[in-house]
Length: 475
Image 1 (cartoon, rainbow, N blue to C red):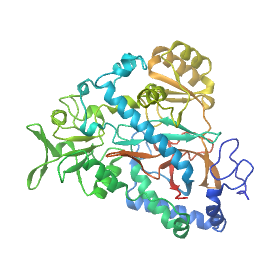
Image 2: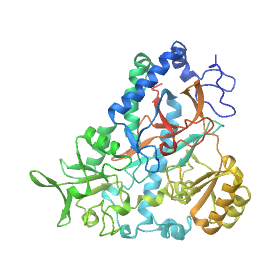
Image 3: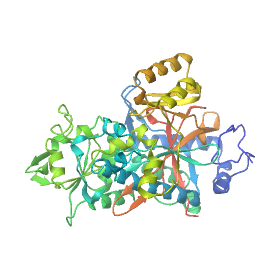
Image 4: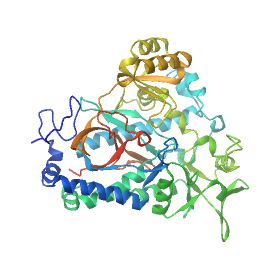
């Protein structure tokens, strides 16, 4: 039995098969959903919205003239992932994280992958995110990417594809955690009956991973935030509170004798590990951008001296580059001698003449992205763009080809989502979180982002997207 008026079109729907049958892992939820009147569904949604506001679950949108603070709209219909499907994702994400960590260690040290011409040398050494002060560095325990948020989509073939890697300061995990608490209240009996894997222990796992970076018995850990005006400040304060550690700004810290101290009412206290939520180049005005008012003068020298650990390590941003993304399958093969478990989206590099020619001729069929842009900005979705926009991007590509890649327009899967007209199919992606401490661990849940506008493929919160709770089943 299908929902009246529900139509996913040719897309893969997470709840329904193309024949309109309920997928087995959604069966129990669907039976419960049928018993909930529309009025109660709307009431549950209203309650979820109010709870988010009460909890302060907001983010800032700097360009939006309707006001800075917004809630990340949480839809009350969860995304459900069966256990076998999750195990496949987990294996692929662990493999990718391990390989990218080896890649970062190599390009800042021996550069074997560049010498063997697996990746063009100029792509790495010429990247603005390749930080020359990090050359020759090995971070504590040899780990560069401690916290990773990897974005995936499921195509109409039912297969997952990696969309991009986020190795700098991936955000959104607080929304995953708080959304779970809200949705558990909406479906308390069903949640326990379904056997959903917990995510509530994430802060404890995060703290344990951060403490693992220091050899002291009781290392002092802090979360370094740019401050209250940052778009993800809610998350910074939330994680610091949940871990029971200090939330600090750059002005709260001082470096003496290549050691980092926190200024407290009792005097100076040495800090051993910083979970930094500040971009690389703003960390230390003496090492990177001299105009940075967010960082700590001398922090990088203390880091090089081994007196403080930083997560994620400075320099990881080069692996986020969308042009480097195209080479990740080769990176996995080079370092691990394995084929990728999870596929990349096929990618055209505009820096290469053959690819550029194809992109310019087929721009109306492709998604074009700036290699260093994020949040849904600097992007063209060819099939939904006007001829004027096509021509604009053609000129941008011609003028600066190294700054652009292009990919086929994929068919993001859909999940039933509550709208004013009832339940409608809306496109989603998936951001699982991976912690790399004494071992690599994938948290059994994720931030599912949903495009709230019908037909839209843009799920980013800054572009009007929302979120869903993600249930990973034990069985």
